[in-house]
Image (cartoon, rainbow, N blue to C red; front, side, top):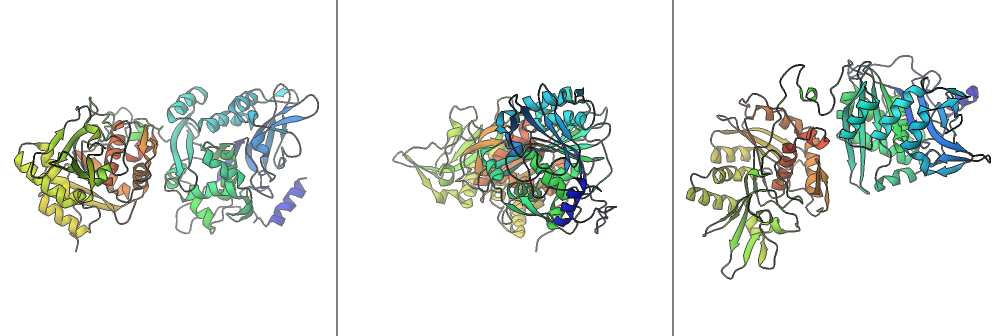
Length: 618
């Protein structure tokens, strides 16, 4: 049998195992490998079986497990996912888990066709309630083997495989009970909005003594992901000719995602990495591990996916003070917040209204301004962007109806309906002319002169032209600051979500206060269905997606690294940029450290200091 299998591998065209990993040509170190795989109810992924090209016998260390019930009449019920397609499983030891009687185990190369060839598909056997108890009580030939390898490790990994579907909070809580020597060190949700919506949580857990890690892929958790399993034609991937196209695509998209380098940064700090997954997550493990262990340095798929082995180190648990940079016995790290918001003609972004979790009354400091003309006949003309295709309430904050040649109207945060200003009714007309920079700047200038002691009017007037400057050339932005904001410097300007809309950061060189200007004119305002973000529900999907794209871009780190030098951070934005600003502030100020959206935005406060200005643009 072993000879026959190896012969098939040669026919498939696999390269022989390299006895030693070649160092990167760029001097990056030694490419990492997957040390073992533990999968539960995984469907098959290729034809012929996926090999471990880093192993002499092409066998993956670890265990592939699926549940089955042998029936008295001679038939059997089998976890439906494990027999979902007609391809082969990888070369790895396999365990058919039964209940109340002996299970069946075959060491590597196992039988890559199991459980094909009979049995009734039973989706009821696919749950944790079947896998976990059976692994705890597994017997072979009448002997309990749950404490023997590889079953002992499988007993640990089954917890991680299923907790990948759960929240960070619940995962950490259960790990402390069931896996006290392990900690959750990273978790990200990879989201895909092209075609059917899909999101894929991925976790990294670390053993605190050995420093080994488990990379955990999640199975099907969204209706839109079913297409991956039914896309069953074979295709090429990472030098392998016949790989299940749907599972290939899952790994392929992952390697192209902006978050993947954050995952590999953690993996490089592990003494070794094993791959764990349930269902589709197990299939992803098979394809992923086959590619990583192929060591095909010149293959473009391998290049996107691989990472280099670094010096192992114990990583902090998600949400801990240690994760924020606090050393043993040191004072707790104080996280930065958005002190105030200044938005101009911003569409609404969430229902219920966004609130400032750092204030007792939930009100953001600052001012939301929109241009409006009260008409003599009783109607109103209002900035069209504030009204157009927008039926959410605005955030809890002071709001200003900016008038011309008559008194403006201030609604305080505590007013009952100020978050609905301007009201949608037949007496309010959309006017796109009122959306212009000139209208806002002129009206705020007049208002500020009329109310010289009003700080929020003063700051709103101070930042108005800068808020409109995201799309302007750098030379013009610097000219705006020199003209309207004496004593301030432009200290960073980076394109993130869109090349034509850079994020701006300016600082007062005396107080060290900073204002962050977020763009958003390319955000999809028509994508106005509600979705979740940063622990909040029913957030405008288009603005949320734009903010995520902004902060996932590598250039965002250049902005974020300078925020600790600011005494206060204010956020300003015009139009959809104002909406993105409001969402950013609500997330930063809610302080939910176990939420990945918050972790992307958070920074630790430092000693306020002057940030060097950008060179004068020519």
